[in-house]
Image 1 (cartoon, helix red, strand yellow):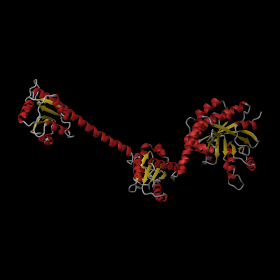
Image 2: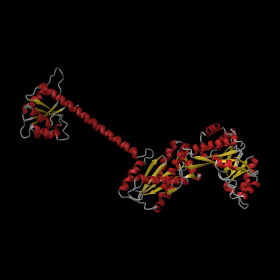
Image 3: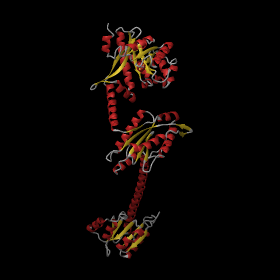
Image 4: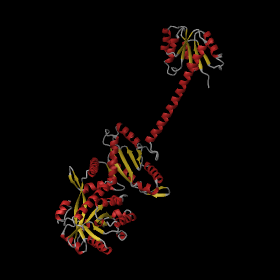
Length: 582
């Protein structure tokens, strides 16, 4: 460790000799002598001039000096930022309080009266040196801490503005860059928002490690389409976004979009596997430089969502009607949540007739929404939204509960042979709690399960045939009847019919409405009925509207039917007036 440097400023060299003697020959109570590097300046000007050379840790400054006195020297040194922390001990023969106060006001840290006393000098020097060393240690620590903070800040900025997986810029960087370009007056900008279709299947099938490798490969391939001054960022998960310059209109963007979609025609080779994947693309064009970055990004995201609704490998350019559509959808979803809580969903019942005997066989329960302001809302408007949000599951269970309660009420009135058909959506059928929910509802309502028909679409059972078989067997073990709804409109499931424990097939109204002797649907319906009779399944035709359709269905052996020819869906009170009179 270097010896502390002390600068003695005094116009009398003899005074320096005395100080040097006191500080270098100290025998203080047997303690070891403390060594210092002593330097001498004969004037205030010399002292200021040699500060850089001597680098003092302490200055012993005489007050009474020609040219510039010690007070002025002290002020000048303390005014220099690089020397302001160096302690100054004023050595003076002045002893009045006023003189000493003047020294302190000038910036002196301590003072020693002349003639100098050895013990006092060494004590004050040690104290000031110790304080200065502590200050230096603190300054060094602060410098180190500041360097650490700067380094950590740089790391955090890197984390914020760079995607750790692909090393592409991040969403935060995109917003910052977009803001900068808009503020600089660039208005011919476009955001091209990409979302990988069904990427969760990749993670589910190959694992997240392979999924991450695929994302890196996608990023590398997309980077090949970057032009100078364009930016490609990873938005998160399986989403990417291009920020493009000099895009005047939709037409000028078409070649770029064509190339992007074309780049996904070739498979990605990841983990020794060839993986094909497609993307959905949403595009937003900047309208003016006053537009907020978040607003433009939201437009691109909205367009991308609309593209995904159209199916895989779709591209959609944003227009303002999409904002209105998204707003209305949000309002609808909020209203549906409230409707479930406020029990605004009610049931109507459409009669199902045995068309061979013309007698009432049962009813199909159909959900209706009694909106407090809009009145009765069409199922075509709210059912798709419930499917998308998953609200179809709790609403579907509420529908089943109401239907079972009504069936039980009619059974208690003596109509014990009536059946009640209730639809199960794809999401309901795949719900893990389906069987438990049905058991709970049957226990709560006391309805006879043998009189309940659950209608399931072809797609619900064909998405996972083995699981569907197991579930339908569990339902049949509870004596619940199973109907395949809209048969013939989904997958070709004729080969599976003998494996499913089902009771009924419902012929879709699209076939019934087009029944003509010269139309091929004639043969489709005829074949379905013939096959059903051979398998011991009852056939229900829906959408019967004319006597000609009824007569034809009777002739080909169809057992049950429903449609406006018989009656429209009715509230329970109307059903009782028309069909269930005592």
